Amino acid sequence: MTTATFDRAQAPSDTRIEQNRRAVRLWLLIVVVMVFAIVTVGGATRLTESGLSITEWKPIHGVVPPLSATEWQEEFDLYKRIPQYQEINRGMSLDEFKTIFWWEWAHRLLARTIGVVFAVPLVFFWATGRLEPFLKPRLSGIFVLGAIQGGIGWWMVASGLVDRTDVSQYRLATHLIIASFILASCLWVAEGLKRRDFQAAPTKGSLAVALFILALVFLQIYLGGLVAGLNAGLIYNTWPLMDGAWIPSNLFAMDPAWVSLFEDHLTIQFVHRMTAYSLFAVTLVHAIAAQVIAPGTRHALTAWLLFAGVVCQAMVGIVTLLLVVPISWGLLHQFGGVAVLALAVIHARGLIGEYPRPERVAA
Image 1 (cartoon, rainbow, N blue to C red):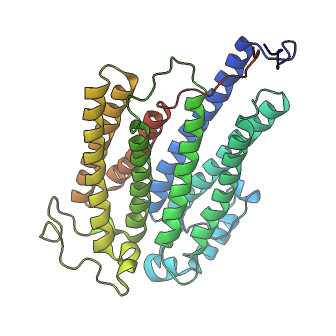
Image 2 (image 1 turned 180 degrees about the vertical axis):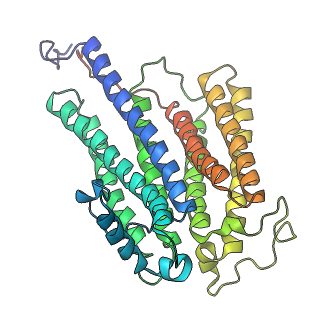
C-alpha cells in the first residue's frame, strides 16, 4: 500500500475541471469557426484578385482603412506601382480599386481579430489557473503557429509586388496549409476536452487508417492551394476526361519532371483529381470496414459522415471545374475542403478519447 500522492486539498474538483475544460473547449471552437471564416474570405480574396491591393504590411496601423479621399488616392497610387496594375488592371478606376481593397482589408482584419481572440483568453485562462499543465504547450504551440502565419501571409503577398502579377503558388499553398494546421490543432485539442464515454478503436489499425486519411486531406488541401495559385482550375474544364483522355499524354513534361508537380497546370490538376479519387476510395472502404467491424458505434458513424463529406466535396469540385470556377462555387469548394478536414479530425480524435483527468489518489 502506498500513501496518497496527490494533495486532496490542492486538487481541483471534478466539477471545476469540467467547467474549465468546457470553457476552454468553447473558446477553441469559436477560433475554429473564425478560421473557417478567414479561409473562406481568403478564397474570395484570391478569386477576386484582391490580394495585392494593399502593398504594405502595417500590423497595427493597417487596422484603420483610408478615411479620406487623399488617403484613398495614396493607397491607389501605391497599387499603381506594382506589375498587377501595370500589366492587367491599367486604367482601373478608384471605385474599382476600392472593391478589391476591401476584400484584402477584411481578410487582414479578420486575421488580426483571430489573433486577439486567441491570445487574450489564452492569457486569462493561464493567469487564472484554468489550464491544466498538458494544455499549456499545446496552446502555446498553436499561438506560435498563428504568429508565424501572419508572417507567411505577408511573405506570400510580397511575392507578387515586384516581378509577378500574382502571388507565388508555393507561398499561397503554404499559407493555406498553415491555416488548415491551426484549425485542425484547435479542433483536435477541443475534441480531447469533450466529456463522453470512450469507445476504443475497433481494431489496432483503425486509428492508423484514420490518421492516414487525415494526412491525405492535408495533402489534398495543399494541392488545392497549388491549383488556385496557378489558376489551373480555369483550364481542362471537362470531367471525367481530362484533355480528352483518362490519363493526359503530357504529364510531367517539365525538366526536371518533378517540377511539374508544382508548376505545370496539367500535372497539378491531374494529381489533385487523383488524390480526390484516392480519398473517395479510402474513406469508402474505411466506412464499410467500420460498419462491419463495429456497427452502431461512434466510430462507424463518424466514418460514414467523413465519407459523405468527401462525396459532397467531390461533387462541388466537379461542378466548380465544369463551370470554370465561378466565385460562388469556388468559395463553396474551399469551404468544403476545410469542412472535410474538420470531419477527419473529429473522426481520428474520437478513437483516442478525452484527455485524462488529474489523478487524485494513488493506492
